[in-house]
Each structure stands twice: as C-alpha cells, then as structure tokens.
Image (cartoon, rainbow, N blue to C red; front, side):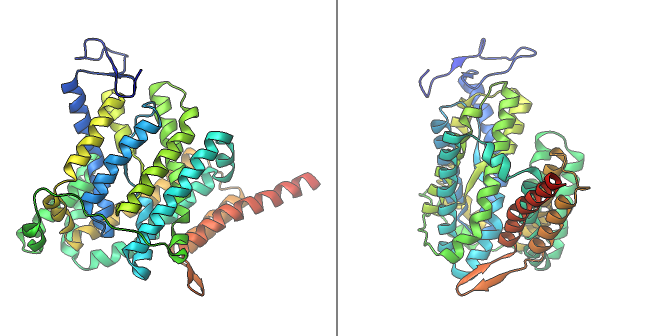
Length: 420
C-alpha cells in the first residue's frame, strides 16, 4: 500500500456492530473529512491554550501542529493514528526561560528538547524500550508530571488575581460543563469555559480589540528564530521525560484499541514527535506531543483510519493562515486565563496521581513515599539554586530527586536485602 492510499471499509458508509475502520482503511471521503473535522475540534482547545498562556503566536503553533502531524504519519508509515498538538509540559519551562532571557531563548529550549527526543527515538528503535521502563517507572513518571502541573500554581494565581470576576466565571463554567455534559463536549470543557469567559469580558469592554481589527484575514504565520543558551536549555530537560512517557502511553493505548502490535513503531513515534518539536521550535511554535483527546475521538467513532488524521493535519495548516483568527485568541483576557490555569494546571498535577494509581505504586514502600514527597515539595515550592549563569529551578531539582534518588535508594535497598 502506498502512503496515501487506503482500502474502502465495506460500502464506505457504515460500520457494522463489532467492526472498526482500521488504520489502512477509510470510509467514503465525505465521511472521512467529517471525522477529520472532529479531530480538529478535539485538538483545538488544548493546542491553542499553550500559545495563549505562553505568549507564542497561536497561528504559528497551529501551523507546526499540522505539519508535525503529517510528518508523524509519514515517519510511522501510517501505522500509528495520532495527532500532534501542543504539549502542556512546555508551559513551565517556557515561562521560566522567557522571564530570564526572552522568547527566543525559550524556543532554543524547545528545539533542543525535540533533538533529544528524536535521538531517544532512534535509540529505542535500535535497543528496545526496556531501558525507558527501567528509568521511568510509574512512581518517577507520576511524580514528574505532578510537579510540572502544580509548579504552575503561582502563575495561575497571578492571572486569576488580575481579573477575579472573569476568572471565577470561567472556572465555574468549566466545572458545570464537565459535570452536565457528556462525551465530546465534556472533553473540551476547558476550552468552552474559556470561550464563555472571553465573551462575557468582551461585552464588559475588558478585551482589547485593537490587534484584532488590525490583523489581516489571510497571511502566512509569523515565524521566529531561536537562540541557544545552556541556562535556558537545562530548564527543558525534564520535558523530554514527560514526552517519552506520553508517547509511549499513547502508542500503547492505540495498540490496545486497534488490536495491532505497534511496539516496533514506538521508536519511530518518539523520533517523529522529536522532529516535529524541533521544527516547531525553529519556526516559533510550541513543542508537540501525541494527543489523548484524539484517541478519545477514535474510541467514540471506532474509526482508526489515518486518512482522517491527514485531513486534520491539512485542516490545521489551512486555519493557521488567518492572522485575524490568531489575534482573537491572543486577546484572551487575563482573568479568563487565570480561571483556566486553576483547572488546567491542577488537572496536569492530578494526571500524575493517575499514573501512580494505574501503575499500582505502593506507598507503603518507604522509598516510593520519600521520593514522591521530597520531589513534590521541591517542585511545588520551586526550590532553586544558581551557579554563575545557570539556575536549576524546582522542576529540574525535583526531576533529579525522582530519577536519581529512586535508583540510588532502590539499589541500596536491594543490596541490603541481598546481604541479609
């Protein structure tokens, strides 16, 4: 089968009970386009939240999201249906890098993150994934993810305090939508809540529309160049570990859903995400990751066709060509971002706990308990130390404690057990 050809599933119009549309199949093109549009809607909210929060150009991020998705499908030879959207793991290091040296330094960190991830993918391709499972057991991965989310509590508080009324409205809307709605609407509750807060603020006159009026309807995305400073790059190293965990988890989820063994594609999936993230950083966009939101669409539709993801990637590129659209997003009121931050950053933190639960982490084990407890306090309180031009912030130090501390204490415990 060539890269851009798919077998028609049945009559192309329906899916019989107990059947699925496999990765190398498709429905009729109108139906495939419809599923592709669902994938755009699913990724849209989360993909745009990252540039809105960090200050990156939204249309540029969307452009590289679409390009990254098409690259991912090409590199994995259409065997892994996934959409590459903005990764929340970049929020904290981008904010830290911008505060010290500006956005170009942050983009340099994104580029290096992508390069390292691509190299990891090639290593996994050659050596297998066993070493990753050894280095990142659930206790370590869950702790790092939780730290990355909860370390942003201060940023959420700062935005919230600048517009508490809109912040409360936005947060309340997110809560009500997630509780009342079901299915797809529930999965995009954060974005819908943001829209509600935005619209109310607009009617109240709290949105600066000058940039929206001045923006063109059609134009190429705004591209920026990275600069590379070691002091900024080190802030991004923990993100590599999160992206590895996300990609591995998502490929395993897709494998379980499709009934196809995709272990041989694990390395290429990591490599593809690394290439996508590298390109995004070079051009001024945010780093990418495979999206759970789109895995949810596949579960709901039973359509695993990669053809739908080609439609989604191309659609994202087309949408990225409207600066007017990006200006609307860039004008999001700070209070609404505060409400979103309270929910979103907390959810990222809770995802770490979910990893613990699903991995059956035993907190009766003193090593597990001490590593998680110490890393969380270091990360959430942002315990930092500096040497010359280099600052090791709370996330970096917590990551070191989680990875190195766990391996050292585990080795000592095993040695003691063997000796006795």
